[in-house]
Image 1 (cartoon, rainbow, N blue to C red):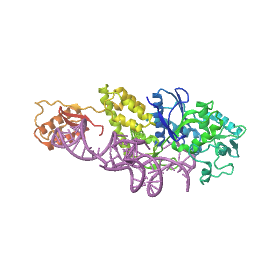
Image 2 (cartoon, helix red, strand yellow):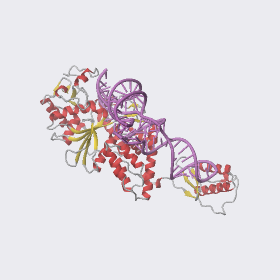
Image 3 (tube, chains in turn orange, purple):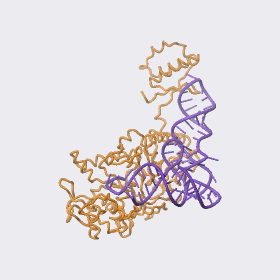
Image 4 (tube, chains in turn red, brown):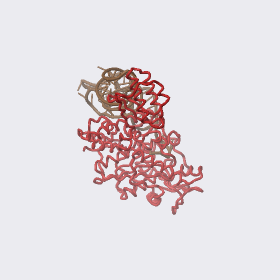
Length: 476
RNA sequence: GGCGACGUAGCCAAGUGGUAAGGCAGAGCUCUGCAAAAGCUCCAUUCGGCAGUUCGAAUCUGCCCGUCGCCUCCA
């Protein structure tokens, strides 16, 4: 196997991937904030990291995959207030739906799914350290990070603090020392959920600090850094920039993460998908309408870093791709021996910055690979054969024996005397026999009428060299 | 205004100096009364435009046009 090369946002270059510790890869991916329903964009992002994780394991690494849950934020509190329930109920409802959607898409559950509210002590400890090292300060409404104390701020996203200050879109807050400073801890307002924090004051964590605290606790207690930190491209700024600013001053050996990996955003019917714009269809609704495996193949077709546009037309094409894969699988099941090479080609494609487009193309262009290679390649892409793949679940064609002595030529009177209810199969055979007779005397009109009659009773008929065959159609 | 990405056939999408992967859709042939299925074949002299570098460019350089994203909660 060749070297695995991955794009690193931190260095803006494709680099050879090398774990920091022998054979161990530690990944932290910024997970969901379940204050609202998950959408397809989330699916794309987590699906990519699922494929990356599978491939790293395929290469023999022991992977620890952490994906957090931001279970406390302004929106879930506000929604809970509007609906007269608790933020926990809001979060649990949406997160359960998200987990179910991920399962259906073939995205494996993370090794650890830490909830922010379960790490309050670690978060507070980190804030304490930041205050002691003068990277943070308290005001009357919260504790803020002093961006100016971290000279490298902006390095990940390619910005500098002067530029950011020039932008008029940064909200001015009288209490902050600098407009760029962001909240580590928000003091509780009346009726808001809060945690005690002596001596500063009860409140809740800001969004960014949880990732710094949890990744340190779970992956890098010694402050030497971990391997891969990931998320959607929209997290590069400010979220990941802020994480770096919080974590690195307290580390023995920065950087916080060796490799920063970001998935491209998804447009929904050519428009940005976002919570605030309300332009998205909940994942659960989409999964009702489309085969999850087709959605998976659709995502694999596009490079993970590219902006991708999801349309009804594109998912239709993906369905056809899925059918092709199923068909290929059935053929190979019958002839499992083949010419080796597919898996090596798929590995080569994935080595090249996880080029799933090419990997999928190799699978579709298969030239009789061994069954085990085909299965392995599919499993790397996270597409596993399930019940719907086996031919047994497709309606089978039933042959009809037509003896020479059968049937006597009849006329259309038989149409009204048919008993569909009592002996369905016998009736089908009867109609087919009659049609055959009509064909024999080249009465095409009659033959087509009979085919139509069968169709109306949910029977599909084809003529084959072995004679007519029929099966029940799903419809009607 | 600042930063960044992208623009390849009707659609989706690979390809980063050596002569355009793959899929969908479409077309033709075999077969066929019709229908279906299967097999075979075809489907970008050309990569947003214009210059330039080069023996050679979709790939490098410059300019222009267009689309989108980030800069604010966001995967």
